[in-house]
Length: 379
Image (cartoon, rainbow, N blue to C red; front, side, top):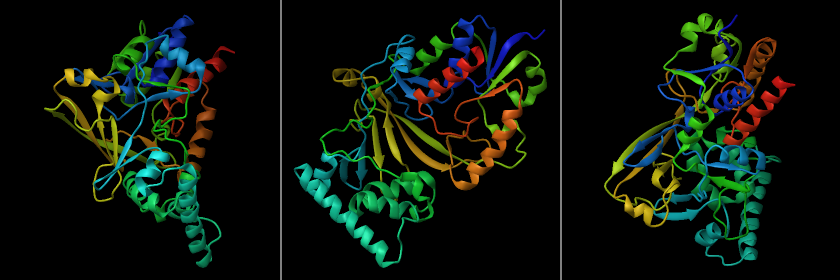
């Protein structure tokens, strides 16, 4: 008989939710991860009394009441509201695009004035395309110009997007931004979701609550000991790269990744906001995260005389790097479909999460997907 009911490969959010629910069902699980810590990309490191999001900013947001209740039953969440600021040269703009953005960009005061300005610029873009004999946007640049106009595109979208994807906007598919949220109200809340916040004490508290009582091992390379590890369990939950699982039989799926430069600064408040995007192409990093603003508010910010910032650099993924975002173009979508066919034939393996499903997931979607897969197992 196998030693465990389930071997869970990957201690990220998907794997930890799986382990949590299986334990409640009386199943014996082993969770392994090749990293030296649990939690996957939501892992935090405490530095100078500040929870640093080691793998980039993670802001929990959802309109799914079931998911919100689920995480709050494990750890209480705070009131953090994501309201990023964009910096273009010496100009500052509020995001997402709202009346504050339009007032800063054009000096307009009312929604009617802002809409008129937007309509004028969108009409100019459509006219230019028509004059060039183009009926539908052929790339991201043309799509963005028809959605938001020249001024906002050139200052707040173009440079940031090109840094993020490592390609010119004219080389990126139009479908990447089929719509851009525009709000004719003075509202800087980035998300429209009903619920939003950060776990009090950091994401490690959430992970610790999920895997309490579950056996875990870190620093374990699954593929270096695959046969031995597979033999330990009746079923496997795999959350790693699906192409790696199948030995890259059809070739490598592409990813974007992020590199971080993190500094401790001798100031209590560096930029006054958790997230500041740098949208001009000449600045090499995409944004600066000041971690204390996720969990410290008001006087708390100044009670700690130091702060920690991380500069984010977007780059192409290469072996040895952490894969972050799937490149959902036609080529990679077709390649993933081939791997999905192989995965569907696996009898005792469940593939789930961002890497195994080659899909960009928000955290609430990860939890919902894990709970949905568990429902299928139970039924």
